[in-house]
Structure formats: structure tokens, C-alpha cells
Length: 301
Image (cartoon, rainbow, N blue to C red):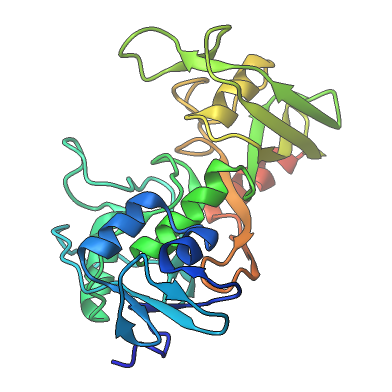
């Protein structure tokens, strides 16, 4: 392996100003935590040679970090994945509805993680499974997996800074009056140990914007953009304004037309962790939501 050639395990950084190796990496937004791990693993190189973090790097030098093979103990299962994009750093796919992301006590198998573990083993990808964003079991749409610690850390910064554009499609009960509005209301737990969340003065700030795409007889199709990442944010905010998502059994009621909440993460935009290029991905609506829209458009309903 050449340490001056990028691959799935090696990331290169060009030195723009004379400073220490540590300062160069910090200027490239390498976190203190990741830096300590790289230092501990002796995985930092200057012009292809092992180097101390206090060594001086000159303009034009190349610093490389190496991320070795990893062991993931998730049980592999041959679960189909609708992969939208893949490279050294990212695995992006359109998550199906009714799928849990991580194995839990009540869902030991059949999760997205089990499917990724199988895919990794088939492709001889020796990496841990690192989810960058989260989707509820019943929410479909774009899901991002980082294939190494570097890309995970770089994308985590973008999510923390709210520089990632996240849009959803939601179908809600009732006719939403305003064509566009912003809901800026704090969200917290309904009560201790409760799964359900509510708008509450002592909650954390949450900002949701919606645009009406279509109105039906007794329902509305919305495009929703979130500027914060609170748990159940869209479901809580839309329920609070009197328009809960159709099929949401926690904040609304079951629907005879769809077997889950009609919520789909259809769009995401961020900067690539390695190239810093803008990346945009759109996940088409799943069949159950397109079917629901057809039912709602039917003048008989």
C-alpha cells in the first residue's frame, strides 16, 4: 500500500502553510478524539514516512492518515439494500419502510445493520457500520453510512453545525391552511421514560419548515425541511399544529390505507467528507405512499 495514494484506508492532506502536523490536521477539521486515536495507532505519516505530531510540515508536503481494517460483530443477513451511491467513504441507500436500523432487544434480526453486515462481507469490506443519520423504523428514505472513522467524523460536524439540508415528504390529516410556515417550538419528553415527545417550554429548540405541495379532500401533501435534529421532530410539530401524519400510531391513529406513518426522507445535501464537493441525493417515494396519494386523489374518497 502506498501511503501517497488515496484508497479506502488512506486519506491525504496537502500542507498549505508551514506548521506542525497536528495543526495541519486540526485545520482540516480532524477532531481531537480522532487525532488521539490516529496518534495511538501510529497511523499518521508525512510524505509517506512515520512522523510525530509535533513535526513541522512544509508547504506542499503531504500528510496521510491510515485507517486499518476493523471487526464488526453484527450478524450478517441477506437483506436487499437499495443502494443509491457508494465510494471509499460512503454507502448511501434508500431505506425501506418497516425496517429497524440497529438490532435491539425486540428486533434481534432483520435490521438494516444485519443487511449491511452481509453486504460488507460479500464485498470484503472490513469496516464497522457507522450510521451518520437516523430514521425511525416506519420512516423510509435516504440513509447515510460512513465507511471509516474519518468520513463519520467529518459528516458528524456538518450535522452538528446544521449545514446538511434534509427534506422529507409527509402526508397529513386535514387541510393545511398556510402554503408555507416555520414551526419554531421546543420539544421534550411527554413524561419520564415515555417514548412520546411533545412541544414543551422546557424542551430543546426545534425548527421545522413546511411547504404545501398538494391538497386533497381531507389531507395535505407536504414537503418538510428540518433545521434541527430532534427525535420525532416532524411528527411532533405537525401533530402540534393539528395535522398529524397519516398512519402515525403514536401521534395519530392507524390508517386503513397505509401500514405506517406516511413520512419519507426524500432529499439530502451535504459536502463530501474527502473531496468537499456538494453531494445531493433523492430517494423516490415508496410504493405505499404513492398508493396512498392515489387513494386520496380519488374523488370517491
